[in-house]
Length: 145
Image 1 (cartoon, rainbow, N blue to C red):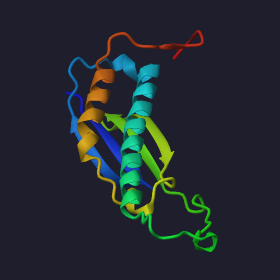
Image 2: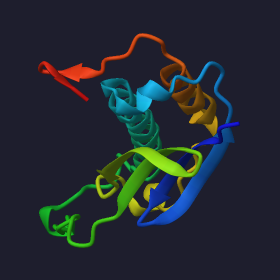
Image 3: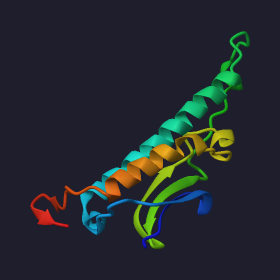
Image 4: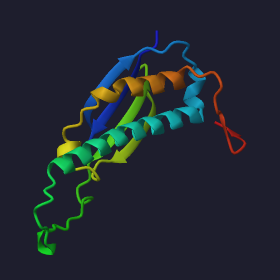
């Protein structure tokens, strides 16, 4: 019996790890473009959730009645100390896909208090659909993967 999981990290620390099952697992998916597209789609779902939480956070702290002056604006390099997220898909404790993205475009309050419980079912469904797919893209530019 295969053990499937996904893990979301920030700076190498686990934020979320979930195990799940896959009906009709197709082992050929590991050498296909479909797994790359799956991990890219999952990261897009996570980034959309973080963007929504960023907008909520910024709106809560926005005061339309306070005048903002040029000298009040802090200019800092947000990538000086980068916080990176990694999203990984594993089969039997072996990594089959991993994608990294920067978290510095989100406020510290958002990136250090990530809560993806609401989107976990969507992520699992996306991965399950990919891992059980029969028709796979196993060729890129005429080269077999």
